Amino acid sequence: MKTSDRIIKRIFDISLSFFGLVTLGLFIISLAVLSYLDTKQSGIFKQKRVGHFGNKFYIYKLRTMKHLPNNNKITTAFGHFLRTMKWDELPQLWNVLKGDMSFVGPRPDIEGFADTLEGGDRIILSIKPGITGPASLYFKNEEVLLEQQPKPDEYNRKVIWPQKVRLNKAYIEQYSFSKDLKIIFKTIFNT
Image (cartoon, rainbow, N blue to C red; front, side):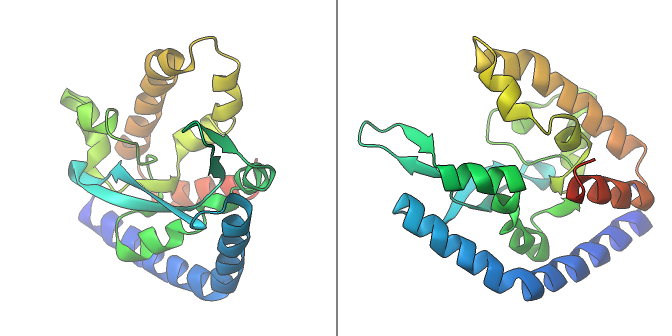
């Protein structure tokens, strides 16, 4: 990605995330309060993820799961609704404004995935992770797909993850701002 592309991408990210936080701020706070009432835990969930150049950062999401006494977790009905609408991702506007993330790019993974990339695959770490991206669109029903597998973790590592790497590499190698706009459009309108 050229320096001029990076500058345009960052200006776009700052402008849109600031506008999004100003216009949706009260809505996000309301959802966080509802999430708190639903789960009896903080309405905002934070988790360490692997980002740009392999640096770790905290991603913010609306909490969708409730902790059970036996240390298991369950997605609540309200949490399922938030995930279906993709509203659980709205706090990531703050991540974009801060510069941890971009609107479009590879999704930031937990440790054990992106931080283990080798060779040419490490190009994925050369850009900021995104709220959405080509792999996110391709695997928009990833949770459902994994629920159908007898060994979901193994399927994720052997089938989904390698395909995500290919899609994300192609996105970076053939980058254009107009493609970013198309990906955002497809994400918003679920096409």
